[in-house]
Amino acid sequence: MTGFDGKRIYFGVCGMGLGHITRTLPIAQSVIAEGGQVLLSTYLESVDYVHKFGLPVVSAPDLSMNVDITGSIDIKAATLLSGMGSALTFLDQVRFEMQTIQAFEPDLVFADTRLSSIYAARLLKIPIVSILNQYLPRVPRERDTIFFRVIDGMIMTTLGRSWALSSIILIPDFPEPYTISLDSLRIPRRIGARVKLVGSIIPQTPNKNNRVKEIREELGVREDQKLIYAGISGPRSEKIPLIKLLIPILSRFPDRYKVIMSMGIPNGGSRKIQRGNLTLIPWIENRFDYLDACDAVISRGGHETLMQSISYGKPSVIIPMPKHPEQYGNARRAMEMNVAKSIHQREVTLEHLVQRVDEVLESAKIRDVLREINEVHLGDGLNRTLDTLRESVD
Image 1 (tube, helix red, strand yellow):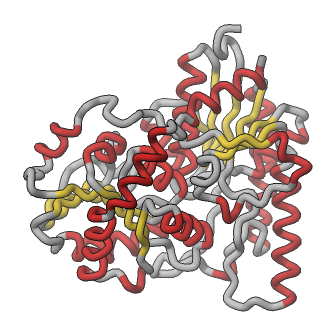
Image 2: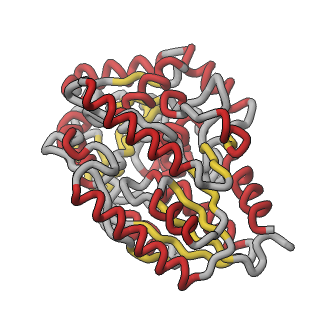
């Protein structure tokens, strides 16, 4: 078989935020380029994202976390199976996935953090390759009681057994000692042989399009200025509070900086809005060009954004979503690895944010670590993932 000639792969993708779909889409595009057929299933803003690239996609029932006006997770709805509403939606997703998979008749199901796709494929006896960066995520709790420990233990056991239904589990992360999601990768030895760390999945390597000079000139970045890229991603309810907080702060950044902020709105257009030293763009068509051109990144600390920043050799300032255990874990690991600094959302002021940006740009240690990671080519997750898929459908 040459590539994926004649093979059909169904992609079930978590729709909470754009991190999952942005790492899955280049995989699906590569399958098509090699003669395969694909169908994507996702929800929320991820559906609009896929539409922009013209790939076939179906909109599954929505499943998301509740947040308050600050963008913090609502503790009462902090886990996948908490609450009757979420449980019913999840069961509806499984039903939807079974119907859609049966109609598409795939040779393989590829699930990006989608338990409903895994359950549906298992019930239909179709091989499953999963990709995820949280095998056993931390559950945010306001009170640490024996009752909640028991509940969390039951949830973790269910999650672990569910992921293990996959034939192969791919982890889009670096091998140790550079693993970002180390805190949530407590994988049992009994399934260790089916787990592969593949590295960062990025569709465009640094300097591929060589638009660095063009973009910096387009944004009016002088030679004595640094360009900061603020990529604010995540579900709309999570990112809007941070965007509203950052706009007046970034617009007053010192003259030694130019800042461009992507608001991550797929249907928002690409018209630039100027606010002092800040350029706002609702949607950047190719964020990798801007990632390549910038000197440092400001982000929520989502796994994919952080992995991409590291792969492009860019230091980060991370503002984790309040009460979000994954982003706190990512921020902690990034600081341990000396590739980033973090700041709590409640402490974000002009003075504090400028201080963190100064620190990451002036740190020789951060520059050395980023150079060391990229010298060993740990970011080739796309080709490693495609190799696994070829073997799985051959």
